Image (cartoon, rainbow, N blue to C red; front, side, top):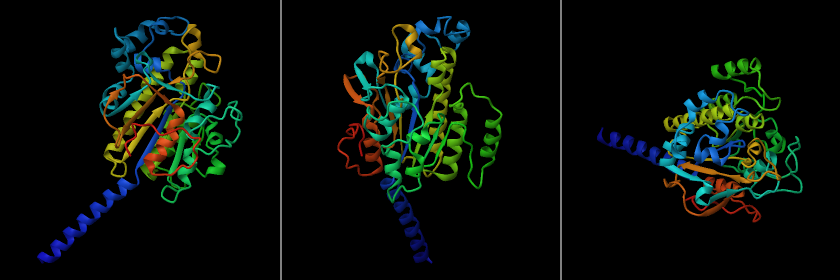
Amino acid sequence: MKKNILSIALLIFSCVVLNAQQKETNPNVILITLDGLRWQELFGGADSLLISNKKYTKNITHLKDKFWANTPEERRKILFPFIWSTIKEKGQIYGNRKHENNVDLTNNKWFSYPGYNEILTGKADDERIVSNSKLPNPNTTILETVNQTETYKNKVAAFTSWDVFPYIINETRSGVPVNAGFDIAEEEKLTDNEAYLNKLQKVTPSPWGSVRLDVFTHHYALEYMKKNHPKFMYISYGETDDFAHDGNYSAYLQSANTTDGFIKELWEFIQQDDFYKNNTTFIITTDHGRGTNPIDTWRSHGKDIKGAEEVWLIAFGNKIKSTGEQTNKSQLYSNQIARSIAEILGVEITDKTIGEKLKFITY
């Protein structure tokens, strides 16, 4: 009897060890982008020149009641409570140019398709990626590279608010499923939440013709993660860019604040899900910056807008050291993200033209 109990105990222990080893050798990554979110709001909260400007803010008193405080540190924590509490404590935050802690694009276009191409492929392509047109990306993204490996085959997915992403990721060639724009959940067996989201999205008008509201992107992605457990997940939120183009600073701030809550919800899900817990790295960034001077250039980006190449970067989760906001003088680039993801996942990249890995990645 004692031998049987000992044998069972050893078997259970072996299973636990094996599971831990599998998690260690096959980690997970969640890449998140917030389209066109300025570093100025991320590190300083609501902008004093915009929040009090009647041209961009309809109800100044209401917006100040919600997002204003006397110092940039207070304001940013009001706007991004999860980033400036949990993530600051558990991860690393780069891009506060007031400390000369810079993150920049390497492409010279400074708008969305070139920005996402750089993030996802690890290099700029200024000769071929010259517009936001729906043209299949000739370059190979890190999503496609990872999906081609035996370890991660059919374990990669993307959920995005902008409907150009099936072309940026080249869904047809890559085999990576991309739920983008106004796509609905179309799997054979839908969860109750997916069925409800499908119904709700069809009757919910979006202010834009090519971008759905982020709440749908977020909850479609979360349901997919709960059901399918992809090991490499890309989520792209789009509202901040479109509200900025509209000149609606109130909605821009509200969307930024809401997305902070979405990231918190993803983290809380990860923490209670055995598949992801203690084995998942988050990387968060943006595709481009925006202008600041003249003031109206906050609505815009592109090579003629000063500051539109200025971006930021956040990493937290498994094996990311908890060093918080980086205040040392340094320079990082968006083209380093793809190789860093490959490094985390243990996927080899032989292309030497891709940006080098981020040094804070400890794998």
